Length: 364
Image (cartoon, rainbow, N blue to C red; front, side):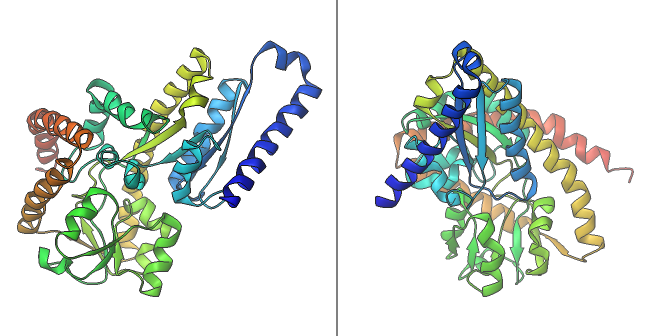
């Protein structure tokens, strides 16, 4: 508690000092427009796609608003640890944060469903659900109750199945593993006897190196290559059944959000939507190069889960996720909505992306 009070005072003092200095040197500007100074915190470290992308988002909002909304971003462990980000924004100590909803599973039984469910939406379907289905409305129901405003602000696209130092020939091979996998996918592995560990990004490689965990899923080829996972694990499995299109989020303290003008609110909304698309496209582009490098230069073993393993994982995922959802009214509301939209998406995807991608490789 003492540490929190000291931290709160330090942040407020720094912000007030900056505002006071601005008022002294630019009195006419301050009186003309109300300026807002926000501190943003991220659950992701500075290096890599997400560090750069969320820095870019904050810088663009500051630039386009002509400094009317000035956002200073601190990456994981620069101001607070990765998993403290939610708390300091919820309390109002900081005004904005970045993460993925399943990082905050302890805050609400429903929140993890907003990251995505195993065998759920891909990136394209996730965007359709948020912007043209009920996704945004349902997300705000959860986040508003936690004193926050929610925006999708990125998507990883389809992830890989994970890095292991042993072969996974059947679902029973998950038993006894110490494995990092957040979200609902981790709950599915727990049902097979996996010791699931939740770790922030900066801690993953050291944990594998020390033997604290036996393996991990992270994101996909580009992010995994950048993290050096190919140096500490032997086998790279696919597809990412657990996270087919994971939502990355911006969450904003609700009181800070309400203090913005309608114009600034619209700017933040549009900027997050751009970030949502931009991050997904950068992951895809960089993955194209990274997968080639991992295979050809580093001789990584890419192994596909066999059909029976995937079939059993799908069946178990549906059971486990449905059971989890049934324990909370809001979680069930979101889950049922996702399943309903997924049925439509599967029907259309069969005639569009799925058959097209199969057709494209016929002549190769």
